[in-house]
Length: 85
Image (cartoon, rainbow, N blue to C red):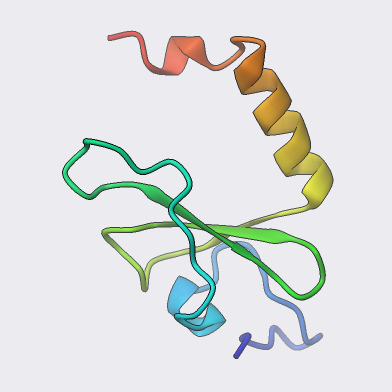
């Protein structure tokens, strides 16, 4: 079930729980006490992200191109500053 925003689309910041509980994955989980980013492929090809510890919290919705650019940037080290204490 996808929440309707007046135009029939999932939207950035919508409650992740409105996207349903099926289909969420934890591709980046690790030894972090169960806190991870979860992803869900939407029917229109976009990708939703949510925080696993807040499954009803806001979902961020990205296009496949945005996800591709993000992953490519991480692989090139462009996000390394985010993990430096």
